[in-house]
Length: 247
Image 1 (cartoon, rainbow, N blue to C red):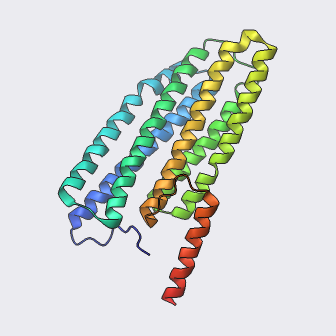
Image 2: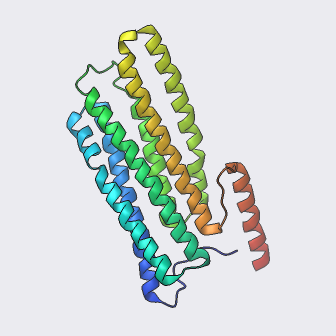
Image 3: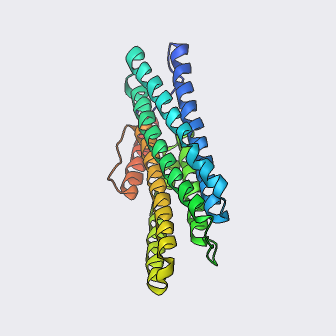
């Protein structure tokens, strides 16, 4: 079974170019991770300045996306990559789009956190956002780790967590509707909370997308719109056949 391998090129410079652009993706991912952590902290702690900083720094994410995209275009034009190398470049182009959209969601949370900081905080101090934020932060971190290690099994484990994020998102939405019915004065604040949890849910979706690109990058299989259980079963069958063939 053909897999992606960055060590097989005759051209050492081509190896270096691929490694460099992959490193740039991980740098961009690390910055988005920081943005997410700061955005959630600004919301939970009522830190207006931190929220504004997150919103203002989104331009850095956009700059990274443009730079990496240009580098990928140059590699496509000058190296004419094939097979696993081509899949790597395609996966990178897709991944940076998702990272940029994560940055946009962090920007939204930052703006909302800055606005809510001047208002009275609820008794629970946005406990539900803190918990969901932690789950999503872990998901983003693990998705990037799977991308860095080109580990499809780890990627699938992370992708599974998107269901938990969706379930928590729906539970918070139901809870928020109840709050608004009980206290109409809280409607504006609760709507803002709903926007924040929606942003976190979308970030989880983008992290899942990155996991799907890892499987595509390594195995050449597009698993969008396919059940995770079916993908895991097929990959296990492939690995079993490969072991039998080697034996």
